[in-house]
Length: 418
Ligand SMILES: *Cc1c(COP(=O)(O)O)cnc(C)c1O
Image (cartoon, rainbow, N blue to C red; front, top):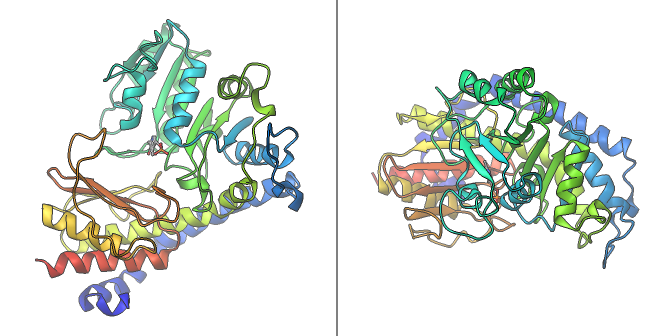
């Protein structure tokens, strides 16, 4: 049994943490209630019915369930419309689909949150020589870096006064970088300012890992297009594939026509009997996000108490995504911690994970991902490049209890080897 294997001092610390973290947990509960209200209301408004789970195959004509899923996502994300499909196989795919629909030859896009997420770099054409990159299609890319983990308002506004930028990209989450995530309040501030100087530019937010962490989403504060993955927050640990794009009607129409064909747009597309899991996924999502948040707050607290530096965010810091970075200081710690997470996973617990080269990554990676859905990161997962300062990126946790057990065993593993 796992509980018996956990170090007694760590168990005592965990017990203590309950009272220290009480207010933080309560705030997370409060956000969960708020977002649950929005989601349940959307189900009722859209009259979701048992018949919406029917499997429509072939061209997928008249799939009312599919249409309701998209209306619910739109309403939860504060947008006019949405495209939520199993044909969009991941967040990266959703982002590429969106950018390639909205950007034409000669257009310029600007990332205003510094380096875009790893998987966007090759699609933009920052490296590699794919004939399908945005660059190969004649799209120009510019970047404005963050200053102290916040937008560089002056440079951004100066650049956007010129009306020759088609699309602005904002990445809400830190992704695999050492910066802080961008809160909705910061995103709201910059969108307001951009709108004062430029009415036309499309403002797109990469919302991966951010959904339902706060009470508002980028769509509530003026983002035109918002993109994410169903292997993360909004899949709720139930959806087994998929991605979404939500936003203004005209942009969703364009993106849908890019996915299917002009003239078809959102009207067709079989959902492979996934309507029920997409609906159940978003229904469960506030709770999954709540559990994931409590798990990382707990991990952050424990590491800090154990004397580790650079645990980010700190346990009492405001969060806008579910990612936690833990600087573990040595190769051994990183491997032992990751093995601890893997060995308490429900799936593949017996696998001993080791650092190995990964396609597309510059360093060897060590990863724990014992998830029901392959690669799902709303389920507890940890991964790390084998490079100083040996930082583990952890996220997910479908229930806080499972999350807590895993973190405690991982810490025990690290302690044993000291
Ligand atoms: C995960 C992630 C993506 C890509 O999503 P996948 O489903 O892994 O393809 C894009 N951007 C950010 C910020 C992410 O965290």
